[in-house]
Image 1 (cartoon, helix red, strand yellow):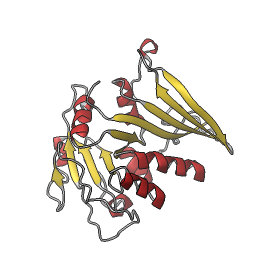
Image 2 (cartoon, rainbow, N blue to C red):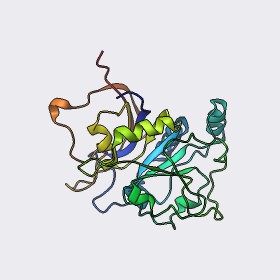
Image 3 (cartoon, helix red, strand yellow):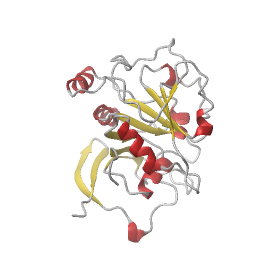
Image 4 (cartoon, one colour):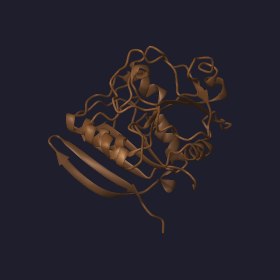
Amino acid sequence: MNNRPNITVVFAITADGKITDAHGSPGRFGSTADRAHLERQVALADAVLMGAGTLRSEGLAMPVFAPDLIRQRIDRGQPPQPAQIICSASGAIDPSYGFFRQAVPRWLLTTQRGAAHWADRAGTTQTTHSPIDSNTPTDRPAVAPTIPATFDRILTAPQTPAGDLDWAQVLQDLVRSGVTKLAVSGGGNLVGSLLSIGVIDELWLTVCPLLVGGATAPTSMDGVGLPLQQALWLDLVSAEPRGTEVFLHYRRRSTN
């Protein structure tokens, strides 16, 4: 697909491939090294995409904390913080989440129906084509209790006959909004939707030393999936053991 962001998926997974348990507990089993790794990937992105289920589990987004990473973003001409995009078709997101007190640009990707939940809140604009405002974010991503529970921008998308968002249109709209590099941090159904249209370019997996099991425990890519004959093949870029974890970096295999 042309005219779309470069998409990097970043996950910590258990040794049996799960991102959490069947109850949707917060997936906080990665080490300090894994958190630092996630922050570095976030720092490279123009925006970070997260499903509403992941937000409900975690309550917070992953901003850039390290001053040197913030300086690097500014040196590259990026705003200090990437936009944090929450994907929710219904738009039903609890305004009490700590996410709404984080000093980061907050975007909502939703349907017209979902946008109605937020359209009347002060400070929210509804658009799909405006560029990222480099003056919006701050280089201090600490929780700020005075920030109202609003989204800075609402992006609406059409739905397919199956009820999924029209991701081809969504990705084109993100490019028009200034997002050329997109990091995806969960959840499995969201990443599965991107897999189904073949738009994942890079994959970072931190394999952590625990087992969860369970047929209904989410994996990094859920949903319908692809037939084996249509699988998205990857090339291994690096495999680095650090302590008890293994950091894997894959890149989409070129078809040229």
